[in-house]
Length: 318
Image 1 (cartoon, rainbow, N blue to C red):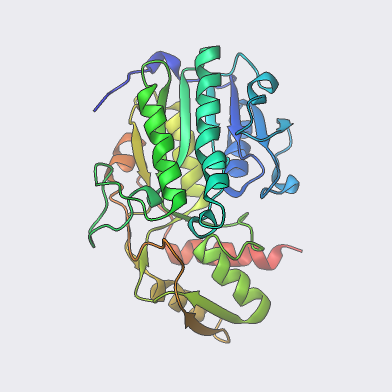
Image 2: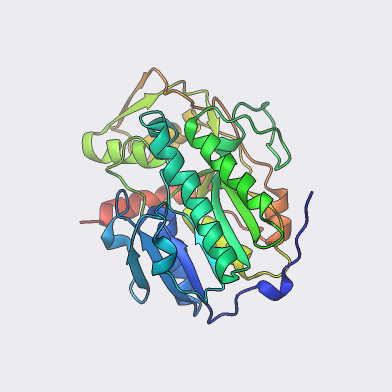
């Protein structure tokens, strides 16, 4: 494994950081945390799927597409780090237009990597995904597990990781392979991305949940606050020099377990199962021991607690 030490390249608390996807679910949450911690944030989003309301106050906002060649001209040359969270975030949708998916999720990474190299930006954090693994045995999935993605989305994420690895001598990168992230701020209007947000949106609007696929499928759900904590620590801890990190709860949770928790919160909700979606992994959950050790993260929000918080936030949103 190609190790890169970059203790000297860690951003100081008041450096400038570029965050792409800043109007999206995870990007906006990470950017808010960075502002709170004293960073100067330049946020990038083309607002194709993100919402302008999500963009944190106190950042410089650049409305632009991360995959376009002109983007570097719009960005600061003195940034300390790039956090690349822009892109198309659904395995299902990636089959609708695979070329567009490649541009949004891979070409964008390459453009930003060229910008980083041209400006001497030494640190690059990338929003990768559990989708890079594909079908895996029913056991905790480690970072060194085989990568055989089942969706165009997963292929694009893995290609981005490979580009980052190729340029590791000039730009120190970590690909954060996020598992099923959920929580307040998720787009409840997008019923093709985010299992828990889809179920809660349906429960809220129709008191009826339609499950695409078998309820025996299993996943690894991680609450948004834990994900933000992982990104922040990965950026600021000098010892975080991993090429890849699983960002997950490490808990094997069946779809039926999620539905049971929702049913206990909302007894009136009815549930129906339909056929699954293409490229959907049957089951996967993380071995998150590297994340817990490197990022010193021991406290992970239990699913029942996170679901309750998410539901309360939905009820409180006008």
